[in-house]
Image (cartoon, rainbow, N blue to C red; front, side, top):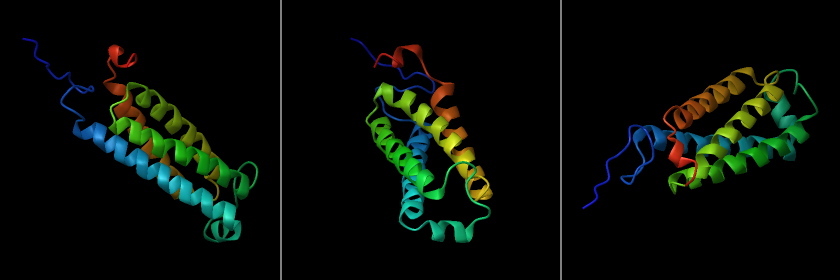
Amino acid sequence: MATSSPRAGGYDDAGLNGWQAFAGIILFLNGTFGFLYGLAAVLNDQVVTAGGGTGVTVWDFTGWGWIHMVVGVLMAGTSVALFMMKGWARFFAIVFCMLNVLVQFGTISAFPLWALLVIALDVVIIYQLSVNWAPDEIAR
């Protein structure tokens, strides 16, 4: 009779642990807020620039808005796959969080505190998803 013993920190048959659930929830919220921020920038960039400072570092708010929307949707979709225990979702979640950090650096001059908060959340997600990643999970 085969028994399954949970691995320390990794995905197992028992389900998500607390930190994995936290990473999935924060990834979903981060993606949703990124999408809404991008939508506000695309629909009315004067609203976004009124609360901030000097503007984006590269390009303009409408262009960055579209980038935020795309990355936000990808992050939220990946979080759903994380909750479905798909092994590939961990890899893509890390990639999309790294991409989101780069996107935040583009808008850091307009909203520095918000960008730093989002970057910190992305780093926490990347850390949690990569620190206990077992090699056999890549193949799942």
